[in-house]
Image 1 (cartoon, rainbow, N blue to C red):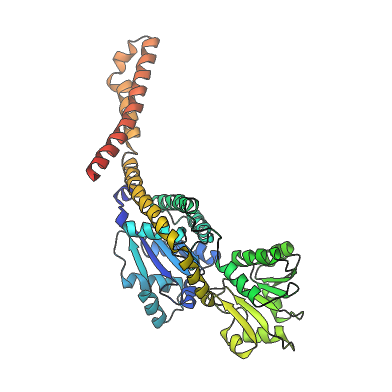
Image 2: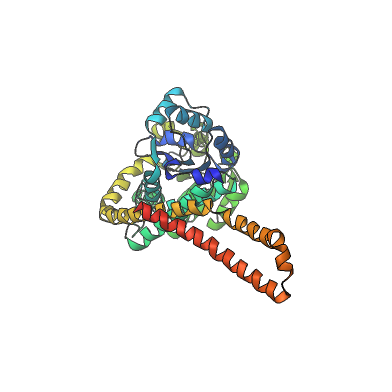
Length: 417
């Protein structure tokens, strides 16, 4: 408890690597799927002496929310990145460090609010990010790496994002990476009877599948590491389900591949693609939404394809931002007020923690007075008198505890003013 009381807002920090500074393929080298997160995050927290840790990974960013009293140095960043991916080269680690942004105190909170309100997203106004933030917190909380500070921050973050989406038009006519990819697909004139292969059955591909089904596409096959998850998505699409290993033997052809897995290496290699295409010489569409890329880049130069990936969607994303610039100012005004509100809530929480032992102490004092100090005098009272005395003391105990915390909060707020 003492450590929590001593924690200040300065100890709340965010280590951020995003599409604004870092190449997307480099960001992808720090991605961890949930199975690896379960094993690594608790070890990482202990090894780097973080009091709390939350890990957020999306298609265009990696964020480490931490509680740490010490300064974040390049040595710490190097150890952090090496722990996440021991296969990084020295040059890759140096580039990651150069592309890293570090936020502390209210700057960290402002950054977190802007990320969750999609102001810092590749596609401004997309709502998926708040779901990703919530899920990341729930997962890290489940594995035991978060604590009171991050819990309060995420709770206020979700409230802030909801207010932004409700009180502004930032998410009006919502756009997302998936919707941008779908628009490019439609612009290529792909017909509704096209044979579409999904490689991966995660959240991104599920969203893409929903878009395609909604627009009357109907010829699907789904390949995934877990057959059960492949079947789950395939059943929603009335398509066929396969494991990733079956890519080596699949012979029914395709017109479009939509790939998004958590693999660190390309899932569709040149060898697999050569087998999949067989003697078919028609032009194919490849949609690669994986970070890092799921489709070997050599395929895009050695075969006749239209290639869509996260990098190629940036131009459309920038055009989307220009249309929403007016709303960004309104969003930032809300975020500023919510940061100020959180600073007060955070200090009030510190006071509550500091006073958390007082009710127990007051109760012990009361019990000592009743059973030891004044025991003989109380024994001379009749039952009615004892009952009244107990009620009076319990009333005073309750009122004192409430008054102590209330007074401490009032004194703190007056000092702040």
